Length: 229
Image 1 (cartoon, helix red, strand yellow):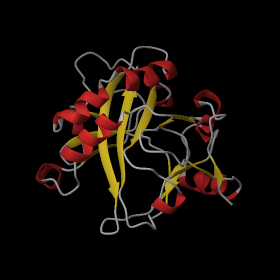
Image 2 (cartoon, one colour):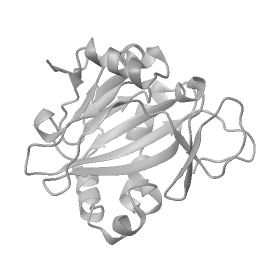
Image 3 (spheres, helix red, strand yellow):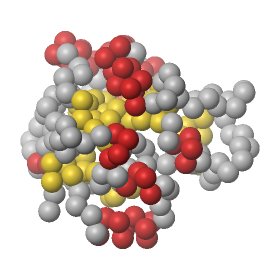
Image 4 (tube, rainbow, N blue to C red):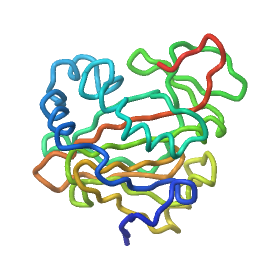
């Protein structure tokens, strides 16, 4: 059984909440016109660091309406640390297993107490920080298309972020005893989520787009000399 997420869900308690009509029609049309999974830039460089590749994404990431969502959920002023783009279509469709977002990207590898393991992906250094760092982050998923269970929307287990960083077997047990919630939203809505909330998504069963601009903000101050990638 899957329930529907609603406005009663709260970021602090549940690790997820919905914000309605964050993007305007003009902003969404600008993104549609500029950003496509078939774009040569994305085919060549991948879906990461969108704000450095597309002006429409840079404008949205710095938009006061979007920043105000991050500001309301973090203890200090937020700054963008990662921007991704996803688009489920009949030609490009996928399933995402239950997981937590446990890594951040830095400009270089450096020894920081209790951070690790390190990996390198697409030329970028990824590392798992401590829970305290992840508690100072929020992901804002901006939906460019109407999204529901049929189109492979995000599913979450509210409150699971409060369990901390989980092992794979612990994730399996929590999923087995929980009721997932589907983040069904309209175009222009935002889903704000804690990186440690358990989440997944199914393949889309629609012959349409399911475009999402995925923005990660943090209020954590990195050690001197280290920058977000």
